[in-house]
Image (cartoon, rainbow, N blue to C red):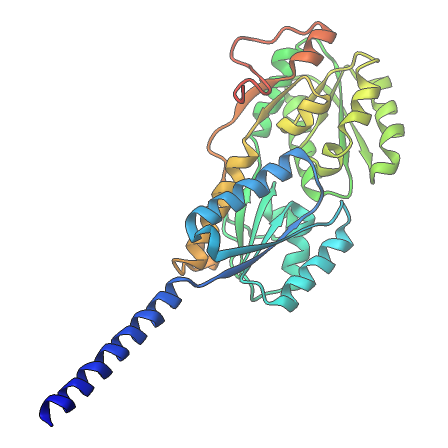
Length: 325
């Protein structure tokens, strides 16, 4: 009788032990749902999204994460709709890819963690008067801000004899305004005369670029999502007029520019994904996480456009696409 009772006790203990093992295993296999709101489809933002997803899958396990990836097709109002759907679905984290996406996410929720990427200046984007590098609340992320004074110096290095520089940008993007203001100051210190050429959306790019080409020796285009989505149009006006374009990032330069001082948007997205892992897996407090910046910048040139315009670049410039070959 004692043996039978002991057997029952041992069997019960084994079952309880197995149940505990199953419970722990289930906790280790927690799944996460991440909403991705990307403003528009173009090379730089696409690369940032891919880098983010790769880092998250590596950190959380590909089988443990699902992505609800949405593209707003360049419309800020659509960003708000996408974010509201994420909030209704109670996603675990939102990736806001580009400034308009970040603004929509910030307006849509104060509870769900929000990570921005491909956002140039968070203080400007979120209208923060006392921004010190940490947004606080439920927002952090990565910035694609390149050294703007160095971009001005690049223009001066390649076109020291130019006099008039046209600053071409979308007036609806506050971070574009910030960039051209900063570059204008740096270029004027170098002796250039600068003029703003702002378009409100893709509908008036053609007329604005035509005006800029008529009055400029060189055109500067900052990191600007609307410009990035219309590089072919810009190039079709600038190239026949033989007016070179210095671009704020690689994607724009590959479409219509001669040179850029740019970052890797894939690496930027990957850094953002690593931040997401820290928040979701390690429990790090997003409110204390400072904005992270790209550590490396590369002088790049568009070999085809430079050849057509007869522009020779110094040896420390790398042809776009050379590193990928």
